[in-house]
Length: 84
Image 1 (cartoon, rainbow, N blue to C red):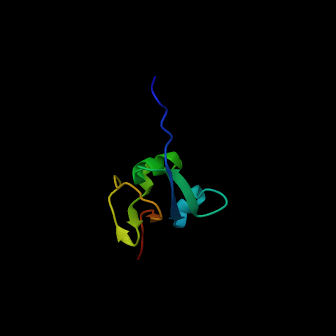
Image 2: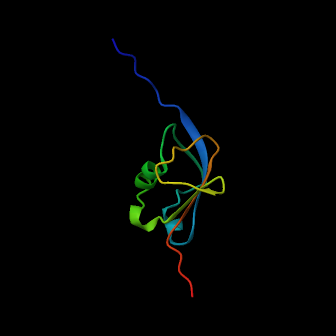
C-alpha cells in the first residue's frame, strides 16, 4: 500500500506591480504555496498571462522564470516598463 505524501507549504511575500496588481490575491501579500513551486507555476496559478511578466525579482535580485521559490522569499513581478 502506497502512503499519500502531503505537500509541505511555504510562505512567500508577493508583490505585483503596476498593471499586474489586479492579479494580487485578496487579503494579504503573504501567500502560502506548495514547496517546490517555480515562479512560472505561480504565474500560471494566479492566472497572469505569461507574456505580460517581464521582470522577476526574488529578494531584490533579478531571477529567471524557472527559479524555485523558497520559504520567506520576497517575489516581485513587473510588466513591461515604458518611458519617454
